[in-house]
Image 1 (spheres, helix red, strand yellow):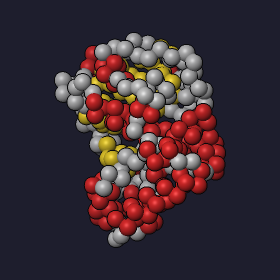
Image 2 (tube, rainbow, N blue to C red):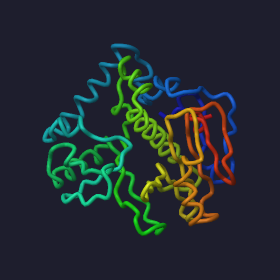
Image 3 (tube, one colour):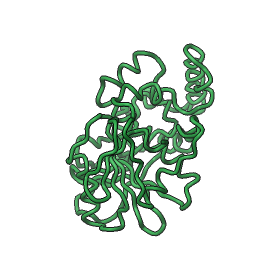
Image 4 (cartoon, rainbow, N blue to C red):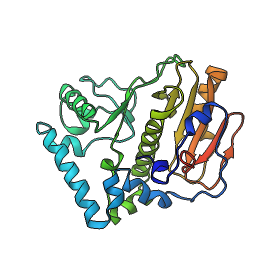
Length: 278
C-alpha cells in the first residue's frame, strides 16, 4: 500500500504537479529520523499489522521464499545489491565514473551472469529498473540504468540498529529515501489520470532521480534528499532540464526532510517528504 492508502487518503501528487499545483506544507516533521520507522516498515499489510518479532519473522520468511525462488543465484549477489543507485550490468563495464561501477564487479561475478540475475529479479518484481532518459540534453550523458527495489522494505530492516543507520549513515539514508519516494510515486501513477513513464537522468554532475513523463512529452522532475535543508545547487540537474526543455518541464521538485514548502524560482520548489501523500 502507498502511504496515502495507509492513512486513508487518495493521493494525486503527480497529477497536481503537472497542473501546476504544489502542496504548500508548513508543519511537516523535520529530519530523517522522523521518517525512519515509516521507511523501514514499508507498505505490506502484514508488516503494518504486526510488530516487533512478528514483523521481523514475516520479512525473514519473505526473504527466504525469495531466495528459494532464485535458488541458482548466489546469495552474495543479493546481499551486495544496490538500491536507488546507478548501475551497469554490461560485461565490459564501459563506465564514465566510479559511481557507476558494474554490478558484476560489485558482486564478484561476470557481467553476463549479473545481467541474467538482474533479469530474474525484475521478473519476480523484486527490483524495478528505471531506464535512462534519452533526451539529447548533452553529449556526455551517462546512459546507464538505475536499479530501484520495487519491494522497498526488502532493502531495509526492522531493528533498532537499522533505524540508527538511517539516521546516521548518509549513503544508506540517501539510497533508501530515493527508493522510498520512487516506489511511492510509481504506485500512485497506477491510478493517474494520464499514463506516466518513469525515467532517470544523469549528465556529468547533473542528475535527476525521478522523471515522470506524459505521452504529450510534458515532464515533472524530482530530486530526493535525505537532508532537512535544501540549497540552490540541489536544483542543478532540474535547472539544466528547464534550460533545455522550456515549458515541457512542468515542475522541478526537490523532496527533502524539512518542515515547509519553499519556492526556488519559477516552477521550482522544495517539498517536505510528506508532500506526496498529504
